[in-house]
Image 1 (cartoon, helix red, strand yellow):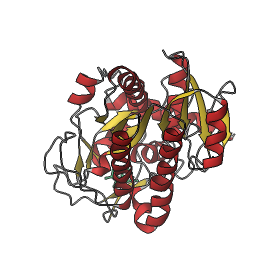
Image 2 (cartoon, rainbow, N blue to C red):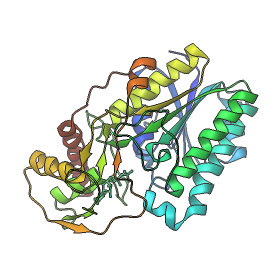
Image 3 (tube, rainbow, N blue to C red):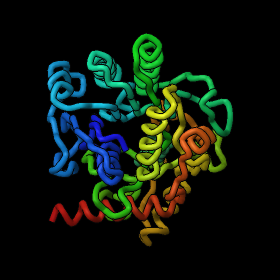
Length: 331
Ligand code: UDP
């Protein structure tokens, strides 16, 4: 493992905090920048240099990069709620696209050779195949997906013009928590399906809603490919090794090539928790494609990614354990 620093933006957030721990576990040296808009300071171990600020703040970035020998940036900090992006597109373009541009600019100014970007399956839009490979056309159907795709384009252009290579990892639906309970999804304003369902199982909310049961899927509810956050961050470590080894760029899906409907996910949560809760069918939510399932051939072949938690029950068990832990912390 390279002994230079790895700058993690959004390192106090859900995925970023798992990444920070994974870097430490691998013997690497993370530094975190986080504006704590959704992240939590205590999610970052005290031994990790922490900067409270905006990942697009030029002066802050210059300061960090002058003081630390940063070899790679892993950029998580972003707004992630698809429905919100339709209500506040300018906010999403500022935070997701504008800040990424400023961060990439800082990487180039300071000659940081490697950049890993949190992209999303949302760049594909409504797919025309059951399993989506990276060669599938990109045609996002919401501002969130477009805010991410624009950053992929910026990176492609920048990597041609300057000495930097990049990986854009297109996440499918990230869920679960650290298997040994060090961190998890803590944000107060939960919108993601598994988090909502485990909260319903723990009676933190009075049941839950299904957003649409008239999609062209087997039971009418949307199908997604749920990937354990622990496997996701391992894909980032593999991507970092790839960038250092190959000197090439990489666009790569991260998912299990396994689709579950909203209805199926809710059943698994009820089974794993042993709790029945009320489920109400509502209208469709804006910007939801009916089915998003990854091909992960590229991840397994090029990154040699071998997932350890490819099992929906395990994902739900870990999400539930973390949510229980948050309940205890509130006492
Ligand atoms: N969903 C739902 N009820 C909820 C939250 C989500 O029916 O309370 C559905 C949502 O409409 C989508 C799927 O679950 O079809 C996954 O949504 P999520 O917000 O978890 O992730 P996204 O795919 O939007 O990134």
